[in-house]
Image (cartoon, rainbow over all chains, first blue to last red; front, side, top):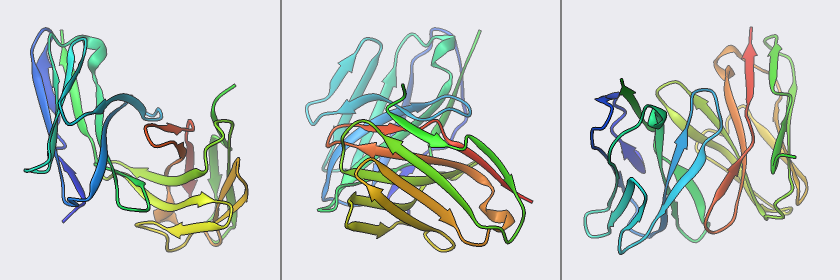
Length: 110
Length: 110
């Protein structure tokens, strides 16, 4: 079993739609959580951190469920520019290395 | 100037050749990483380093070696390149809250 698992998609949604991605992690000692965005052939960049109480940044909402060991990302009112791959990232263990999910591909259609 | 710089950006090499990918960072972070990305497999960790004297194998270290020459420099070597090492390689550095990636090196082994 992978340490961080994501539905690879692809998710194809119309502009204006709401879309949600989930990510599960296997190590209960995981300490911090993030969503990264990666555009085609580009480097991943931080989209947002995920806090225990849940957090929102404009159209994006991230939530953490430690009991069930998953995190989620909700995108409201999707824009064409949201088309990208979204990577779930977990920072776990005493070594504090970053572990990436394989990513979920989103395409927002006009 | 980019926070994390990788050289070269693109490289084609022959099977059996030795090749080095270089990475330097200006963030002042202790932690540095090398990942490879293949279609459908996401980012996989090759090696990571938490300081100059601390080098650790990642998920897929076979066929690779690294050198942490200084806090700011972390190089990845393929001693004898093989075609299945054809991939996009990313160097990264991180704090507790965010990872910063280089722009990637596209390596093709023919």
